[in-house]
Amino acid sequence: MAAVNDSDCMKEHPALLSRSTQPVLLPDQPWEEGGRISPVATFIDESSGDLLLYYLLRSSERALANALCLARSNDGVNWTKPDYDSGTNIVMRSCGNENDWGQFYPCSIIRDEHETDETQNWKMIYWDCPDPKLGSGICLATSPDGIQWNRLHNHPIITGANDAASLIDAFPDAKTPFKGGSHFIHQQTFTYNPDLPTDRDNLKQMHRAISIWKCDKFDERWVGPVRILEPDVDDEPDLQFYWLTAFKTPSGVYGGFLNCHHTIDQTMDVQLVSSKDGWSWTRENDRDPVIPLAHRGQFDCGLVSAIVPPVIWKDSVWVFYQGRPTVHDAQPRYPEVESQPNPGIGLAQFSTDFFNLNPQ
Image 1 (cartoon, one colour):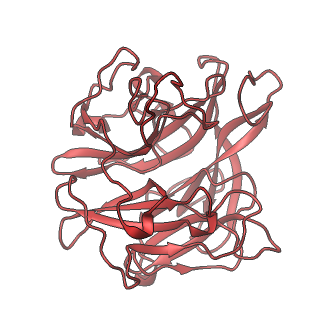
Image 2 (cartoon, one colour):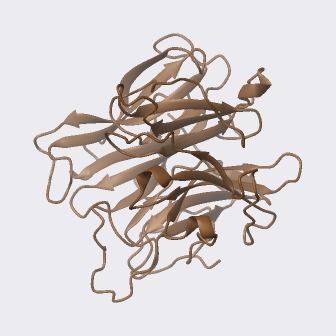
């Protein structure tokens, strides 16, 4: 992979080793025909050492056909899509009900190192509509192996806001304003802001910010939302925070990908943040994007989003992200480019210096 280097790009993170100039995984199977894919989670297979990549197969015309799929690779270049007892690599589908907002969307998957119940080693939050009477929302699922998934409830645990949410298991003995906490959900919520520039944004005078939910036990009561992170006076007036994905680092602090939405031109890029407790966050890298937009004509020149935590593999830090040449309102960032590239899953590789974070 060649590192992106173009006048359209902002400066690269000092730990960046390389970045793909083409999508690294394609929808190339019969059941993926006509669909688009985006990354959801990545892990190392503890038995084989292979890289596991969960991704969403999305149909623009048939939302109920959206599905969670799982691919694997031993080199990060060549991917297999095994048969998981259905003739496909699909491991979860929509419950089949029409959503009153959004569509089936697996938001976040974790492998919980503290879980003592083997049937819940893997945990997921996803957006769906289990009961049409109750509407759409964030739902819970667990799995013993990451392949066979069990929906925990017939209703969402959170119905407010939207599907821009991520899950993390807290460090042991986590302290929060509500005492302890075993897991956190960071979710996009809204603030009324009549002064927000609204040139092209689809939410007029509504400012996207990040709020947190916490629980003492994953499948029980969740408390929230509490707003914890929003743009400040040092940010551009049109900046909004779309999605925060928290992850644990080897040094015992949280890192996070802060997906930043720019109201005026509808682009999105990714900043790096850090935290000691998952509630108070520090903006790293002088607020420059850790994964900036690529140059004109590349598949990731209009919007970059990173909702997948990084993974250490083959002595470097691997970050899979979603890239597309269109911006948030689906318009091409560079309409003068005659042949618009297809969106896809990108890969940025960093040295382990990536984890040199300094939360305040």
